[in-house]
Amino acid sequence: MTDKENIIVLGALEFSSIVIGFQALDQMVKVAPIQIIDARTISSGKYLIIFSGDVASVEYAYKAGYETGGAYIVDKLFLPQVHPDVIPAIGNTLNIGEWDTIGIIETLSIVSGIESADSAAKSGGVKIIEIRLADGYGGKSYVKIMGSLDAVQSAMADGTAKAREKNLLGMETIIPQPHKEIKPFFMK
Image 1 (cartoon, rainbow, N blue to C red):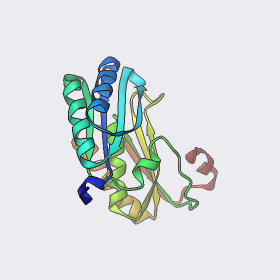
Image 2: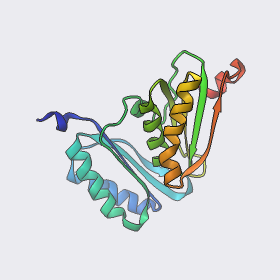
Image 3: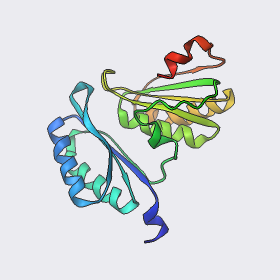
Image 4: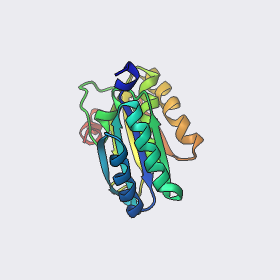
């Protein structure tokens, strides 16, 4: 195996049809040995598949899912160099212990939320606290980040750029010096 084949890659497909999502999932696992991180129905009658693996496997599975989905694709992501903070934060709230400036990015698709988190993390100096996946949010996603004010401002600019470009940015905010009383609500 070459080094390129050992790189962990992240793929995600969001469908407007639950039935098509299940068909795509079946086709994807038949063509390549991928790890399914999450596959399920989400708010607004959509279906989500998040998967990882080596470059070739994710590329083959992504192509099979995309071809099956066709006009039912809401959003898509093929990320060959995912930041290591992203996968653990998908659907989880990570307690990093420090309490600093907060950044929150709200997107209109789950996939754009994951993409925003990756861009924000790659800008440096921030931690991805959570990537919340649409359940009960009308198909939206949101990303929580934390770091110094300068780092969060830079990460927010990078994190929102792609969602803005795809017209999938909902809202965004930066909360410098957040009050300690909101910490239990932010961290759950």
